[in-house]
Image (cartoon, one colour):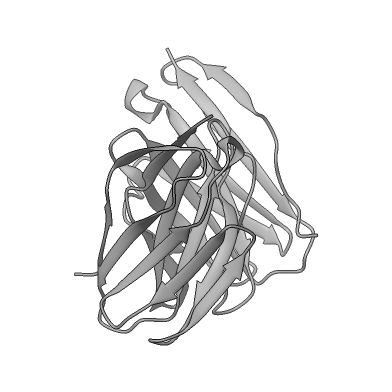
Length: 111
Length: 111
């Protein structure tokens, strides 16, 4: 079974804090993705990576950065959290040109 | 611009009452049509991938079909445990393959 794990299920941070969300997959997948999901807006792609140390901007990269130092781990960084970054964050991984497998999500609240 | 539209937004059925969910898409180069199920507060769970018009896939009470412009998720004799949001996505190539998601259909099955 494919397993994608995320470091926290729930997280509460203050405005201006630096926030790290971590994602680990155990299936040796090349591709990894970060999405956010908001009511009425659906799933939106923030960043993705198709190889170690490689990253590509998704549809809404502003205010975020990512790091992929090892194949199994993909981190999302909020340099200075803002209230409009309160959301459900979902990580996914996939082999090349195939379906994505999602983690359980991290519900982040920025106050 | 790649676009996915799902209808209806929400659907309420009685247990045993069969129906279909629609996913229409416009995409420059389709690299697969993906269906996911998402329960509240959880990450999406992969159901099916369809690659070519005329293709069909089945899993328990669910059957997915694909034409050149849309996909249907047919649910036969549903049970309350089929209640969830069903997401449709198309695969597009941008470096790696990424998914463009629709807004989802929220399905409720009443006992």
